[in-house]
Image 1: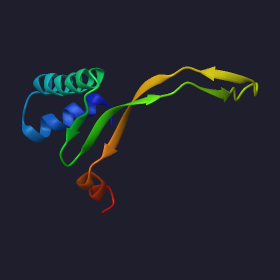
Image 2 (image 1 turned 90 degrees about the vertical axis):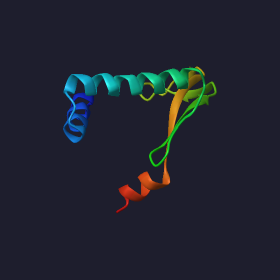
Image 3 (image 1 turned 135 degrees about the vertical axis):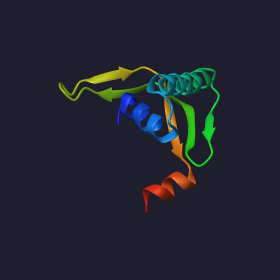
Length: 91
């Protein structure tokens, strides 16, 4: 499912225009992004938690040439599903 499909599904569920629903979904994603950029975690009860994860610099191998390469440190986003979310997936 892509964002337009998500917006359409939510709009149908709560009987709002798609344009208004798109603004709401965009605002939610923007707030999650902003919180994570401040190194805050975002917990949504029943769904899960988003948090920043830091990867240390390391060495790896190029799959094409087999040559050893240096991989820089980076920051990524981690997601830990909530108990109710996992239960819904396993039913």
